[in-house]
Image 1 (spheres, helix red, strand yellow):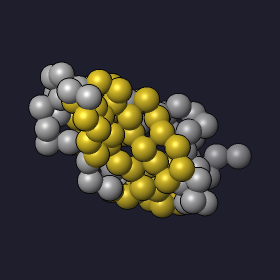
Image 2 (cartoon, rainbow, N blue to C red; image 1 turned 90 degrees about the vertical axis):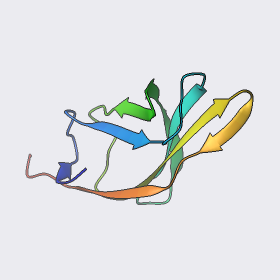
Image 3 (cartoon, rainbow, N blue to C red; image 1 turned 90 degrees about the horizontal axis):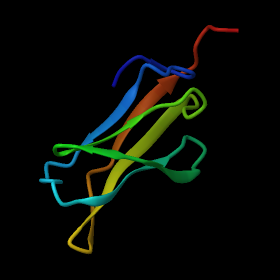
Image 4 (cartoon, rainbow, N blue to C red; image 1 turned 30 degrees about the horizontal axis):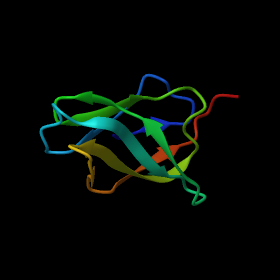
Length: 92
């Protein structure tokens, strides 16, 4: 992702797990906000990718960290931690 702004809703977070997710359950995108707050978005599986469609108030400016989490055959797995910076916009 690049040039992503607060309030942007034409945005999808996509994390490539590089794993076959055909039998995976409970897909999540874990996050750490710029202020250190942690949480998750409920993800959707798309091949080897876990994705989430961003809503208007989901993103605040700053650098975020994201990590995929899913379960296969009762075992929990995590993807790599990635980071991205979201910018404020000029909207009033």
